[in-house]
Image 1 (cartoon, helix red, strand yellow):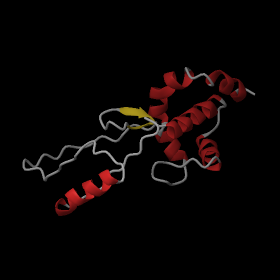
Image 2: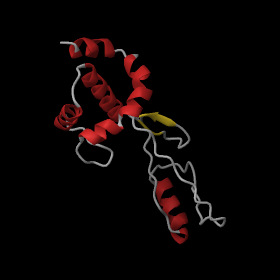
Image 3: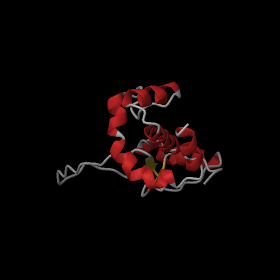
Image 4: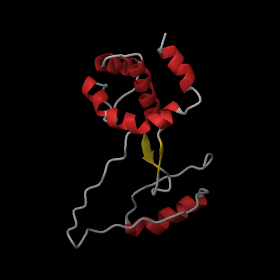
Length: 140
């Protein structure tokens, strides 16, 4: 989907027609509408967070790998192979300018919270083309 630019914006109903006309004159194509209203049934469903290492795909119906987060998982796996401690892993991630989803620096507790995702992601990590080289580098 490279080469496609998308914009999502809130629009007041009374200005919608003018905004659509202006966008179309600027070369944009209308590809969808989104509607919302308050829930009448009081349903208070809990939303699940997107698992670390993934993001919501452009179709908003699927998940896709997040390259930056997958790199963090791979670095953590590599450092575990090196028998690094959680504080050492957090320091290394921070030195490489990786940040937690909250934007804060990595902490040992934050790295520890990645462990379930690391277990889930390890087959994918270990099957990447660069893992054999990372493993060799980790054992040095």
